[in-house]
Length: 389
Image (cartoon, rainbow, N blue to C red):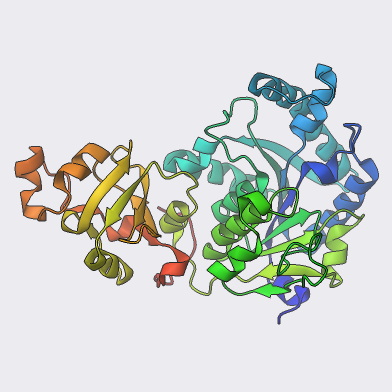
C-alpha cells in the first residue's frame, strides 16, 4: 500500500477536522497543550507551502458551562445559546494558538444551505479561496446558532468533506479518537484488524462500520465513511487517524497507524461533485429496469422510465433515484416537481405538454445534472475538478 508520505507528497491544500472531544476537556475547558502542539504541526505544514483549513467542533461544549446547565441534556434553544457563547471563545482559541506561529486565521460559519444551495456554495468557496490565496487559515464550523435539528449537518466529518470538496482539497485529515477503520468494533472484538488503505467504499467496507446504531467511534464511523465517499469522489484523499495525543499530524507524517481512503482517479467535475455531496435529497424517483440500465450508460432520466415519485420536492431540488429493488443508484436535480413527475411517470416525452399543459424539458433529470452512486458503476468523465460552473 501507499504510505502516508506518498499521500502527502503532492498535497498542497489540506483540510483538518477536529472534534469536540479532542479540543475540549471533561470540565468544558480547552486542552491548551494539545491545541498548541497541533498548531505547531500546522505551522510545519504551512512552512512546506501547504494551504490549510480547519473544520473545528467545540462551540457548544465550550459555551454550555456559562449557561449553568450542568450535564443535563440541552434543548435546541439551549444548544443554540451555548453555540453563540462558545463560538467566540472557539475562534479566539484558534487565533491565539496559531498566532504564536505567525499564522493568521479567519472565522467561517456555514449553515446547511450554504453548501446545498449552488449560488451560496460558490460564494462560500470564493471567500475561502480568497483567504487561502492570502495564506490565511479559515476556521470553519457549522452555524449552530441558527441550524435546526432537521436542517443541519449534525457532525463535522461530513462538513469537513463538503469543505474539502468545495475548495478542491488534496487531503482531508479526520482527527479522531480511534486509529482508523477496523474490520469490526475493536472494543468488542479482540480479533478486529486495522485496515491501512481503502481503495473503494464498497458495501463490505460500509458493513465494517456496523451501521448507524453500532458505529464505534465518538463521531460515528458510518459518518466518517460518508465523508470519505464525498471527499474521494471529489478527488481528495482522506485519512482517519488518532488525534488524542499531542502532535497528531507529526505522528501521521511519521507513519502512525491510520486508514487512508484513496481518491478517485477520475474525480467528478465541479457541478457533479456538488450534486454528489448533497446530504439531503428532498424525495425519491423510482425507475424501471430499462431506465436503470440507461442511467448507468450515462443517459438522462426520461419520464417513460419512471414508475413513481415520493416526497415533496420542487423543480431544481436534489432527489435520489432508486431501481426496481428500491436500491439508490443515483441522485440528481429534477426539472419537475413531485406532483408533475407522478403525472408524467411512464409517459413518452412527447406527451408531457398535453398532460401538464407545459413542457420545461424532455428530460426529468438531464445527464449533466445526474450522478450515479459509486456502487452503481459510475464512469464519469475525467473533467478537471475546478469550480467554474
